[in-house]
Image 1: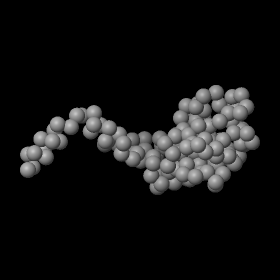
Image 2: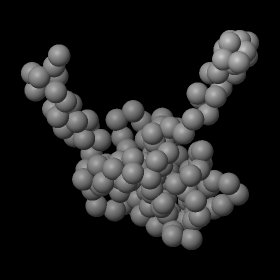
Image 3: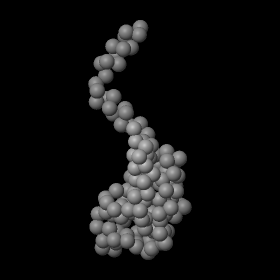
Image 4: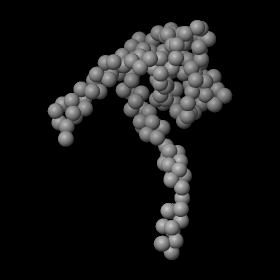
Length: 148
């Protein structure tokens, strides 16, 4: 019986195995990881601003029930908080940041949209992302001379 099971497993195409692995939940999808990331970004978040310049989106990250990080460039990040009526943001596979004003995201006119929802932006805080990366690098064991 065991040899039949092994034979069946061996007959599964490699692509199917990869698909199964790729569909496993990522670390970024866990509530604990999102809470850790939110706390980390909040440490480097500045005072709220009304808007920020965005020509394109370099990267995004969901960091909780009502928070996302948006990188309009590789070294610039913003912590955005949406209205608490936004449902299940923390489980969204992705989202879109609207831009009603040319090349700007504003808390007055723009939204985070996902799953047919328009989540009102209630706060935008710039993140000192360069300082965060510098501090992260200083905390690594290799940077402290404790590498293997």
